[in-house]
Length: 128
Ligand code: FES
View 1 (cartoon, rainbow, N blue to C red):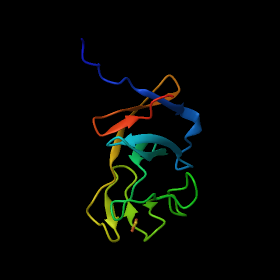
View 2 (view 1 turned 90 degrees about the vertical axis):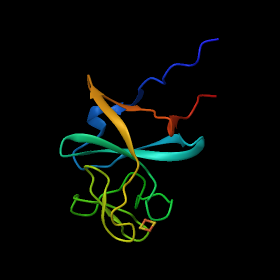
View 3 (view 1 turned 180 degrees about the horizontal axis):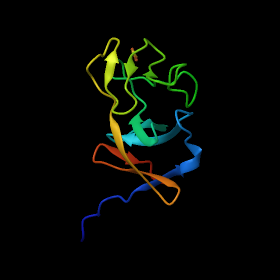
View 4 (view 1 turned 45 degrees about the horizontal axis):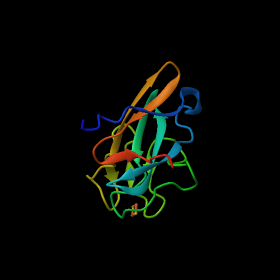
């Protein structure tokens, strides 16, 4: 029997759903086979995606569903204790987990569509 091949890229959303420094698209994934969530947003023209899990305490970051950025739209801020992350690379630059990093997901954009790439750690939720 053949081993299963790599899981193909997963369609996430249309490119124009992600406005520059706008609301994120939040989506369900499996992290180490357990339900978790991830998010994608556009920052400086590029779509970035991270697991929705603070590096300080494993809780979701967003203030309101899909709202991850501070009022100046410059930093990702954790709503619990204010850890401040660089959107471009997910590094925490201030707060209780300074120097740690959000878990990134690989993303691509082509033909007006955004895709994310599963990894051994982060997998899509199977259809029923
Ligand atoms: S849980 Fe995010 S800063 Fe503490």
